[in-house]
Length: 278
Length: 338
Ligand SMILES: Cc1cc2nc3c(=O)[nH]c(=O)nc-3n(C[C@H](O)[C@H](O)[C@H](O)COP(=O)(O)OP(=O)(O)OC[C@H]3O[C@@H](n4cnc5c(N)ncnc54)[C@H](O)[C@@H]3O)c2cc1C
Ligand code: SF4
Ligand code: SF4
Ligand code: FES
Image (cartoon, rainbow over all chains, first blue to last red; front, side, top):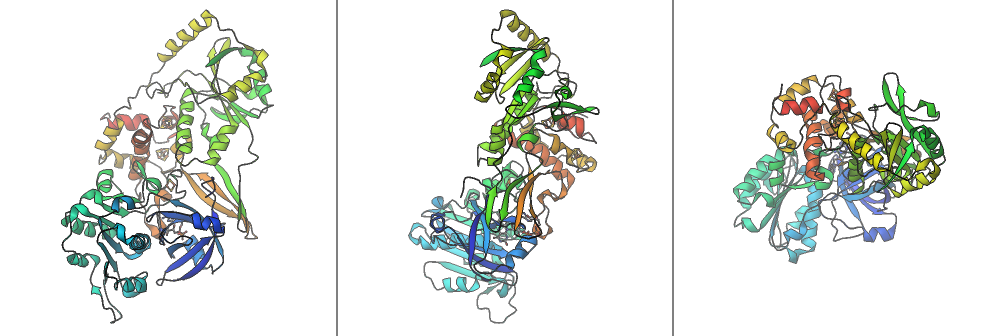
């Protein structure tokens, strides 16, 4: 990044395809190849993506730093900027700044068991963590991946995750609230119904990461607490409006913290003692 | 620190000399209020000013400015060609405000736009005597030991001039012959007496020391609803406060669709859309939540982050809010006053 923290760098769209009806996968690469190879980040960090003349917004990184050179996003079409992003084709150029935010403390995860719990669009940032852990498999204990979507068609990276089920070093559990295809072979029910698959958890030695729609948190956290996992070992990523990513514009402030630099990853303990986080 | 003397009747001559270095701004009367205005005519200068409508932050973070221009996919930061500026008449509380902005903008993730403007803006402080809305003594911001380039202390027929930076020293040297380098014992005496006298002039005293705890304990207080019912969400309190830094971002594009600029505009957490995200969810839908955030950030969050409240006791919110929501009324109500 240039030393001007507000200046986007040009990145080229390498690949894009639809993950669901309204969420699109974007794979991008800095136009400057040298920069492309040096760009490092942590799972859980985000970048500010912009189209000059339209605007800028934060998007989680979905790729893993263990596969350098390309950055991936999963973007839902919801408004002005995202609509314009959806109009772009391969080889077109967007502006990107970052990475920003604290990211997941992957160093603390070393030798620990990891449970990744995902709802809906939460798969975007947690895919980064999952791939990172799988690429550095020997550094971690058991890895559980629990992902719930409303319908099979709404599950992001569905094929990729179904393939992961074949690995014997990962517990990959997928579920949908409702199967409207008649061909879904995995679990049916909300994501919390997957928790019964978690047996023999060693709570002191386990980190849990959660990302999903706001309504999901309460139910999922209740289940995690039942497993006896300490509150500071339960991590979640939060969303707020963001216009800078560097603690200046004030839009992401919650009480005494800036979601963009103190977060977006917070522990459940943070959430309890800082108020208004979720 | 170096200290000099300047006879009062030389002030305009000196400010005139400073025009060789940059544009000179200072307190100018506008109807019944004051602003920091361009002193294209030095007779506009009015040192009786107590507080300007907008604080000097407007020079360091302009209400609206472009961060870069773009053409196709190249971005050109708008950092060159910024003018040198002298801002004369900045009171101690406001200098403390600038020191807070310095920490905020320059410590973690240095902001080049703030940094460049700060470097090109000479802050010339001026002593003041409080009115019934100033409470800088309570916030311990009634004297500034640093954060300025020069500071003028009014002692009847002369100013004691404190040189606070190497730029300040350069500025003195532009016309050293106007200054008297010899400070007599009697001058010192006079200054000490003035200080002691001025301390007695603070009529408004607000103790902010326990505010983090008091804010925490009042989190669910019905007071916030009461204030929220009154608040007009006009954002004026944020505009006038020397330490409110929040901004919004907007792109401007030329009709040709390939050229334009990205602008930064002052924003306020009191505005309804401030925490609104895509899909229509608003994290602070209610005015009561927004008023609470404003005061939490000012009186609690900053203490956690920088060891000091972000209120410098300038009294602008007291002067400005049309419905009397201000640090004075809020703090006294939080502490169980009326
Ligand atoms: C840390 C973080 C990670 C995110 N990751 C993803 C992701 O991986 N995939 C995804 O699809 N979405 C993600 N989002 C949400 C995404 O930023 C919004 O969907 C996006 O801002 C919508 O922009 P828009 O212009 O299309 O929407 P509009 O509704 O048209 O936006 C209107 C205005 O609101 C502002 N705005 C609305 N929501 C936000 C917001 N959350 N942050 C900043 N400004 C906002 C826009 O800048 C714009 O000025 C993330 C948000 C955060 C904070
Ligand atoms: S809160 Fe009010 S008194 Fe305190 S610095 Fe801001 S405007 Fe001045
Ligand atoms: S507190 Fe007063 S000045 Fe601030 S937004 Fe509300 S009405 Fe306006
Ligand atoms: S996004 Fe601007 S302060 Fe966090």
